[in-house]
Length: 129
Image (tube, rainbow, N blue to C red; front, side, top):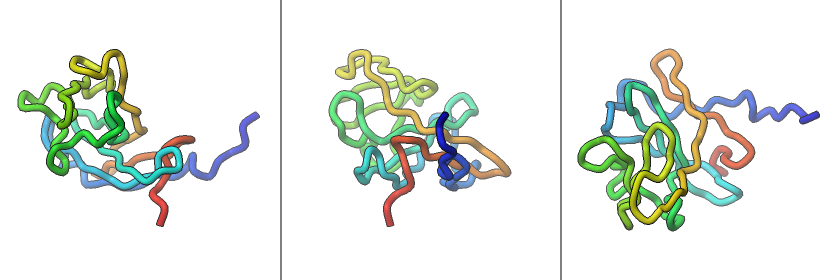
């Protein structure tokens, strides 16, 4: 039986829901992934919010070319600014380019009372102070 981890109950605010537009700019947030400092991001696609670790599955670098710019020009795919790997925003699966069957590491995000939150898990944790 797994011990109850107090992190299971943690919800960390990211931004106001109205900041995220379908296929528009994403919001980055600090976190610790596998013990290393990094960032996550949240985007809106098809009226829903999706969160991912900001790390390309092809080469472990951040995706956005300008802060929060995760979608390519059509607003249909998330794109790595360095090598052009394309990812489906609703699943994080590679949709084209050098990521070859890879996928982005998803982060649990949800909306409540006009706010977007994320929930830590065994791999992604709040940023170290």
